[in-house]
Length: 250
Image (tube, rainbow, N blue to C red; front, side):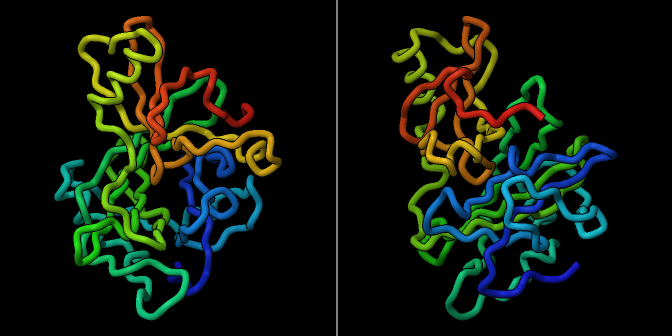
């Protein structure tokens, strides 16, 4: 597996489990045509189409996980060859990757009729001032016993906080206020991403900016007492599942 060259925009790479391929157009953030001012450095080059299939699994560097504790996830991520990318000089590439923040678990939203989603950890990368300059996304295997670093999202301007979402308590209060629904007892809000409808976004049929299109830009999922899932985006708005711009079934 080769190290990505500098000054190159990359599509995030997604794993293949058994004979089932994950649809990149549905489950992985491209960030190229949708989001401005970011750079995604991936494991290997992929075609620039919305539905490009992942690279061969021989190019994926699976790293064993001793546990899913913050320290063990950080240690595993540091072993990735992708973190050895040349970060010197100007251009479209990650910044100094030495300061990894606390890993945040991002769950793939389970939906009927879609190929098997993949859970992940997203790790903020901190600059010398403690702001977030990049986000490292590490995909997990089904048993959560190994990971590989799929891509790094770099911000032109460091963020004071990431993800840019209301806190969990505020998200629950928003669902109560907007939908009139309390969180289901015994549950906690989850950070999730969903299979985003890139096709309609590119065609201008939708304009979605509330997040959730990938682990580097998650939204809150809150189980309600009505038996339904409710969502709160980075715009502070509450959504029903039917309001999410989901990709077509595959």
